[in-house]
Length: 82
Image 1 (cartoon, rainbow, N blue to C red):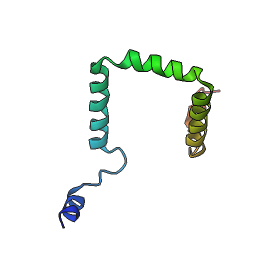
Image 2 (image 1 turned 45 degrees about the vertical axis):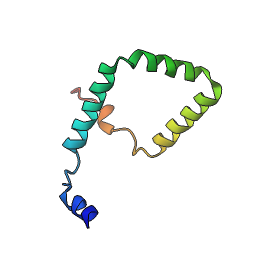
Image 3 (image 1 turned 45 degrees about the horizontal axis):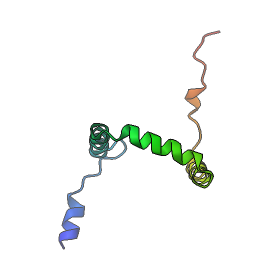
Image 4 (image 1 turned 90 degrees about the vertical axis):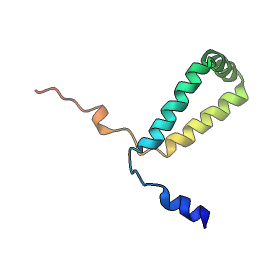
């Protein structure tokens, strides 16, 4: 019963969920303030030098892109008047 009560208390914020955005931004700020950004960047660079890890990352990127709806047509739209 308690679990059901929690589900009914959650609000559907729809597209542009402000609560999720706020939590994400707060987590990003905590990470930046932790001082680990440089260390993680070096770890990522090292990982890209490992052939097996690089292939795994490239595969994950390809899978993610395969789910994309495509590029926004507005990106290439020309706004110049002839």
